Amino acid sequence: MKIELKNSAPFLHVTDNSNECDASSIFVVTDLNASYRQSALDHGCAKVISPQACLELLGINDRIKIIGITGTNGKTTTAAAIYSILLDLGKKAGLQGTRGCFINETRIEDKSLTTPPILQTIKNLKTALDAGCEYFVMEVSSHAIVQNRIDGLPFALKILTNVTQDHLDFHKTIDEYIAVKSRFFEDEGLKLINKDESNIRYNRTQAFSYGIEHPATYKILAYALKDGISAAVAKNNSVYEFESPLHGFFNLYNLLAAVSALDCLGVASMEAICEAVENFGGVEGRMEVVSREPLVIVDFAHTPDGMEKVMESMKDQNMIVVFGAGGDRDRTKRPKMGAVAERYAQKIIVTSDNPRSEEPQSIIDEILAGMHGSRPIYVEADRACAIEKALRLQAPNEVLLILGKGDETYQEIAGKKYPFDDREIVKTLIAELPKQK
Figure (cartoon, rainbow, N blue to C red):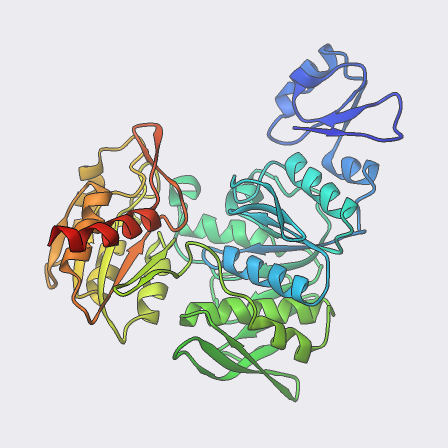
């Protein structure tokens, strides 16, 4: 990664790649590339600086308000909601996360890591600042916290959505995972915590909260989830209302977090913030309605908690669910995912997700280990065939949930990525199936 410099002669650029170094380079040293420091010097680099110094060099520092969001689920939707509301309120803003990087409604980077290497984030911050942005919203992954990929970033606000089991292939234990998330909230900066989440520790200095079940700075007093979301939120002695076309109890939390965050930062009045909520239509691959007749919804849920939140939100309807689990990732969540599916769905089809280097059937067997056969369970390792089977089994009064991949456009099998989009598969099959009958 290279960032061009202006008015910094004799230096022309900063880089985190030692092979890009020469006499006109400044090498940004991080935890991930520290072992290449000498290589950078050997290539002629005359100066080595920290990410903090790089922020100062580029004139970023506190000139743009960075909003960082971490949590197992809800990061992408909460970040997108904050970004959308900021734009609706006439603010210039950037957004960085799982879906890529956007500056004032223009995508400047495609999908990548949830939180990219620090110099990529700094480059995106510089681009946002040059475009006149006042705010920069970013997702913060647990991997990024461990690897110090957010080192030196001056967050104006840090937000916690929730903490449930995920990434134990990396963190090993849930306690370590919780400790990592908690580390993000150790400082005395402004923070916004989900008060209904017990699995977190945080510095109470400048800590505000939001919640539905427990007393909080921003507390939902009443809500309805039919045909969207409508809610009344109390702050101090005042009550404000917002409405949204989004579905699901979990999205009530995401929207409450977004509203609370913008009020914490004093972006606008609560009335104006709540009014702008209605214009946010959601995120691709998150409770995305692909077809209405038959009703087919695609969602990214790939953890037991994520699946439960999605399925709980649809519990008043009969469900068919298609899902699998990713290979080379936390194996302990697989039987738990199977148990969740069996608890809520009337028909279940277990299939492949991204098996990566693992044998698909082995992953499926571990999912099935958490199920007891109390519902009709079908196994189809070929994901496209599984979706076709679900559409053939779907009754007029049933909703088909396809979980795990959301808006991904590939399937990773044996180390290779093949084009695959659940949504496009559904549309193609729906167009073809009537002809086959």
